Image (cartoon, rainbow, N blue to C red; front, side, top):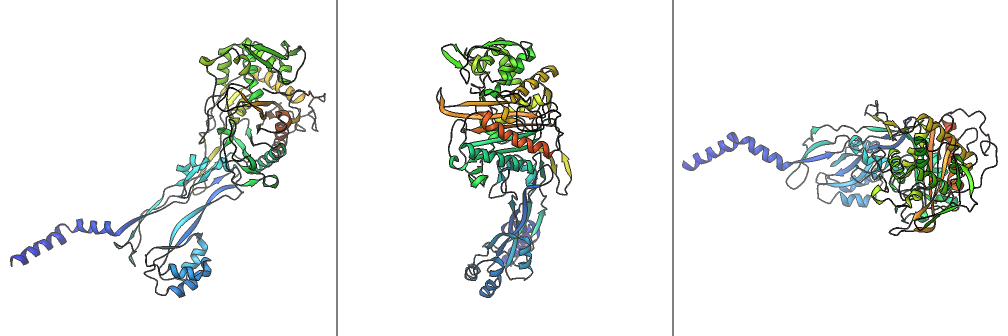
Length: 581
């Protein structure tokens, strides 16, 4: 009787007083949480064209403990899955309770299989990321990893928005890990699809930019190339190309980050998308395009005007170092405009010495160098600047002609875009809206802006930059039917870890805007180690080709009186001067 009473009390305790506790413990042993990722949001160009999209898929699973006729079921499933029947038959007899038969098959195919009601066959939701345009703008868009999370580029930067909220489900299993037949999946939280992002990129212009740049990389045997087109008023980046020559894909230098090709494009498949966004991550000494810092500061301070005369020798000695212009010439009288048009290093240094150290360095910061662009792009570099504490006498020549400092291509374009935007610096932008799962758009905030030049200074700078294209080093940048303003650059490449330059190695560039009289678009082209080396020879023609396409694509009116063929804007004989810094 004592034993029976004890047993009864124990049963009352277990089944009555503490039944909830034991039910909870049993459930915890049997319940297995399953995370089902939400469908990732898409990435679109400015006109809604798909650049990257996640497509729903299914993974086919077998609970082989529930499969009664593995051979006949394998014969029926094999043609539907595209798998050999012998392999399927072996999988269906593994006695593990969980056998993946096919991963990420199309939902429609999974539906046809489900309609057959095969015993022991189940499905798990999934998705695959598809890029329909052969990796167009791949370094900008980025990539996802094996789990579907953003791993690079905008996919990484906006992963939180794109990923959405995953679904949590609970599957009941035996202690041995076998799904319990007939037990439903308990849904704890429904998945919330990710938001899409609508970029400022224009797909057709991006294609034209990449293929024009690719052709020039091949033609000039360059290691890599960058080209960016921007909307002058909004700061929207309309195209951003980052390409590398396949034969140089693993070459590293002070100017080029080692990369691995992802997809070949361009002539004969000799050029690939770069592995990262060189436009913001690759630093280089800019060369003569940096002269705008000196000229803008001197004009703003009233030290010069476009017609201020200077006596310019072809070389000078300063603190034991010799500096010279690209080509030997007798001492000559040049105006400030002619110094810029002919890209005279010595003339520029004379203007810089009138400015002084503090005003030069201040202007460098005013124009955005040494600071992030505002894109927030993963891997973006703010650049390397000469500080006042390290200032040397030779920096009166080195800094104004684009040596000493290291910048990225977008920073240089931002500076020239400020001239095109009537003296107002505007932060660049790559995302113009988010897209809800229902398709509604929420516009991004407009880019922040601030004035860096007075209206009068800006007008003078524009006229001077027009002369570069009209009669100076940039005549190959002419766009038929439009006035163009811009600047060439041919910069030496520093030797890594040494106080010297790589013999024969140069970064060639051209940066400018059009139409010069009413600027709409700005653009930069940079080529790493081309042959020939001059920016006016190799980068300016690519600028012209891309800009011509863009102006016509956006129906920008032609400029009355502008040349209709590829010749200097005034019809005069172009200068043969080159620029090397």
